[in-house]
Length: 265
Image (spheres, rainbow, N blue to C red):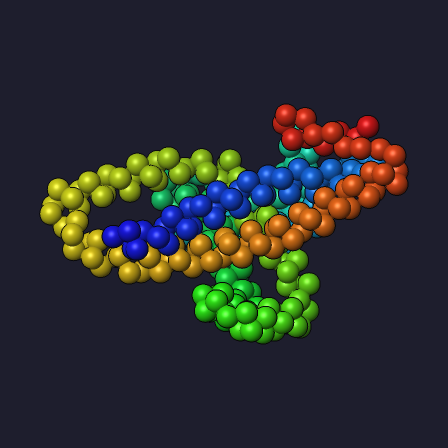
């Protein structure tokens, strides 16, 4: 039982770690942009441009999910806007929440960027970087195999371009507060359905049928989130180094308030 739950725990821990790193990245990337431009409005533009591939995939995922589910969509934008509360909206897709839009469909629309973003990261990791060979080398514990796998990884054509794409996608795929609006109702619906299955005495059959595919799904999620964490840590080092160098050269610094807003002094 514990072995079957390992992929679930891996995916959850990796997701929590990724969320914490994402918070730091968004805050300090905005601060770095402010140091570079010296102007709040221009800083927002630079900040948004760095994450543009991820923002586009995020909003396109919303639009595609809504369209496939038969929900009427409105305008689509990837132009950044600073909100009244100081937060930055990197993009949006309008879709119409009529009486016929149930919590399940709205939750799928809201969670679509996370699904597509994870899928793209997995594709890059498995098809471009061939991380499965790296994982095998790590498990083998042989230094020679690990060295060979790492060498092949670094020799991947356009290595830095693919690394940047993972970074932009990983930091643009998380659902926003508005995306999560229908999730409580969706969770309640799933709990009710699980209760009905249990009362009908079908829980053992359902669990037996779902155990392997669910374990496989969470294993892939854990792999994608872990890959994103590794890439984020690499870019965090670059952001921190650039922030320190530019701050010293210009003689100014960025102070981050409790709300993680960047303020230029």
